[in-house]
Every structure is written in C-alpha cells, then in structure tokens.
Amino acid sequence: MRRRHFLGLAAGAGAALAYPDRASASPACLVVAAGGDLPTVQAAVDAVPPGGTILVRPGVYRGQVIVPAAKSGVRLIGLGLRPSDVVIADDRANGTPKPDGSGTWGTTGSASVTIDGPGFSASNLTFANLFDETAHPEITSQQAVAVLTRADRTTFRRVRFIANQDTLYVNSSSVSAIARASFRDCYVEGDVDFIFGRGTAVFDRCRIHSLNRASTPAGYATAPSTDLTNPHGFLFTRCAFTSDAPAGSVFLGRPWHPSNDPDAIGQTVIRDSAIGAHIGPAAWSDFGTWPWREARFAEYRNYGPGALITPDRPQLTPAEARAYTPAAYLDDHS
Image (cartoon, rainbow, N blue to C red):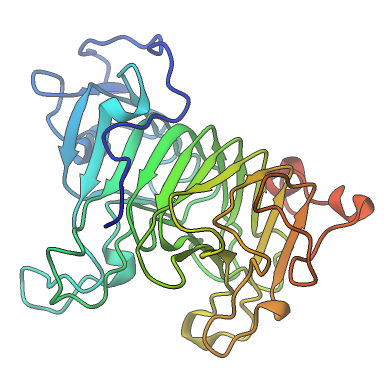
C-alpha cells in the first residue's frame, strides 16, 4: 500500500504570508472562500484581470481549474500557515469516462489545474489529483495529472504537487515553443514518470518524493521529452530525492518519446542534490525500445546513499557543469 503525504507534509512550512485575509473591492485582487468574493478558484480565474491576484483562504477546493492564455501574470496565493492548508484538487484520470459519453479524458484532460497564461505564479498551497487507483481497477489508464503547465515563465514557490502517476506535466504550447518553469522550495510526490514533459524547468531546493507502489520497479522520478533543438530540459539543483520504497527500486528517469517522436531527446540533469537509497547503481531506465543512453541524462556532485558513481551514472565535468545553472535555463533564449 502506498503511503501518501497529502495531509501532513508541508514544503517549507513557516509563518503565514503577509497577505490580506479579507475580501477586496478591487477586481485585481479577489478572495476565494465561502463568504469571500468568490466560492471557487475557477470563478476567480474567470473574473480576475490579467496581472491580478487571487488569494485563497484555507480549505479544500475541488473542481478542475484552467488558466487561459489570455490571463497573463495571474498570481495565486494560499493564505494558510503552510502549503497544506490550501488544497486545489480534482480526481479524474486518463481513462475516466467523460460525463457526456464522448470518450475518456486522456492524460492532458486529466489535469486538475491547467496553466496556459504566461507569467503565472503560485505560492503557499497544494495542487492535487486525488484519483484513487485502488478504488477504480476498471480504469487501466491511470495517469492522473495534478498540474499541467504549457505557459512560459511560470513560477512556483512553496507549492506541493500530489498525485501518483504523471503528477506534474511540464510541457509547452508546441514542440517549437520554449516554456520555462521555476520551482523553488516545492514538494513533488508520485510514482511513475511523475515529473514529465518537454518544457524547460528548474527545481531548486525541492523535495522529490517517490511513493512505494509495491512493484518492481517501484517507479521513475522523471520522464523528459525535451526536443533536440532545446538545450534545456529539467534541472534539479540542491534538491532531495526521497522515498519509502526499497533500496535500489526506483529510477531517476527514463526518456519519453511522445508518439514515438525520434526528436524527443529528453534531458534530466541532477546536481548538488541528496539522493536516497531508493536509487540504485543503475539510475536511468530505457523506455520501451528507446534506450536511456541516447537521452541527455547526467549528474554532478550529488551525495547520499543513492548518489553512486558507476558506469551507468553519467557525470558532468566541472567545466560542463558551468553550463547547467538555473540562470542558463531560465534566462531568455536566443
């Protein structure tokens, strides 16, 4: 049985943020809560102007949320003492039937929150997909996304991402589009390919927690599908890779080739990070017929019981590592 951290764990828990916990007369600052300006997060997204702020009082807010491309610069801020106090969640999976009988949702449609508005930011809250795999054995396509981001320049601070398979989908609006996302002091939890996509992302001082799904292998932390023309995929720096799974039972990643796209040469680089014993001497896995050695996987100066240096663990040289920094990934691309 997988142990989940939905209720208890807060990433960077601390004092409450200094935002006004009251309804605002300004349409540029809306409060979500019973008795607030609006009762649902989606209603607030629909009402807030570009560049506006949505404050969310503690509680669990169910229902799918979509931030459209026209809503740029929206800020979503939880008003609790810790990120676990505000939970924005849905519970559909890839194989969940649509209510109108037109098929199933698919992986993209399963997302609890979809972000297409550039410059979106979120802080001090939790995004979750609460799909219960055990309760729905009839659904075999169990990918269930908590957040799908396709917009450029999204930022997340002290945010938790909770699900099982395919928790965090870091994507872009098209194969040729650059979409950069910054995650700092965040917590991401899942089991299979739970950080995936073709987007550019920096995870700085985050905890990446692999659930124990009681199978072999126990899971894969990343599944990048970075286009070969993009030099920047996923960068993890000063992070902690943790798990309750048995030693050596989890992989750091495998290369995803959507629709067997040969140009999806995924990149995951992990540097200056703590790696638990759940990662073994062979840290990377093939994905079907696609070999991991043809992807762009590398480590640098990691430490901990799972930070082994073996022929199956490519390491950057100090000279190479100078090109793999948050600034290089998040600055404007020429």
